[in-house]
Length: 275
Image 1 (spheres, rainbow, N blue to C red):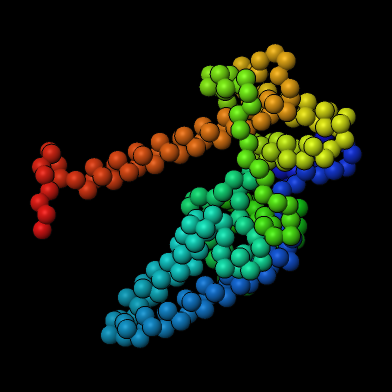
Image 2: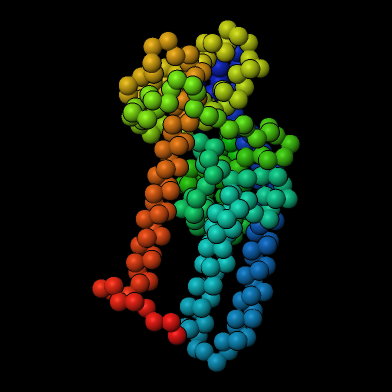
């Protein structure tokens, strides 16, 4: 078993990939997005220049740079975050941006991608993006390498994976075990193996499942209860990892909301007066 660029090549020559989009589809979606945001920036900038004709050149340049950052960096990042990795071009091409482990991207991933797009898509007319994608096994551009993402097919590829649930008998173990952060490639390989296990040859399924379980066991302490089937252990690790990351994110959201409410409130318990 060999892991190559977050993909798993098993002995039978079968690659467990994640439906990465081909370069041609990425070029199509990228061209649509570049035209959309580029034309939007030029048109809106024309109105801004007309409205700020009384300002000096330094102020106009500052406004132009600020608007450039908003339209070509912050706006695409916000769209990708709110749509969970989609844009107008990706909707047309049937693509979605996901993390290397297959999960949805957050704002920091989208911001890294949109910032890199200024150089590799707008300033070089896509030359750097296309060249990088052509030499990448998963069609990644420079922004994807910086953010740890890739473009996944949502049409014409594999169907959505069914959700996992904690296997019976591992609930107590999952609440007390310590989990180190899993490498993105191993997490994605484990998820794809569970999705394709029923269609694999029995001997290959057993051997590959045991190999993945042995790799996961290096990131878990203590190991699963004696006699746990490898596939059961793999599912338990992935579910525990998902639930813990969800809990961490929910706690972070609650703390952020509490801090925001504290900042908006008056000090020393003074009640606010409605105007």
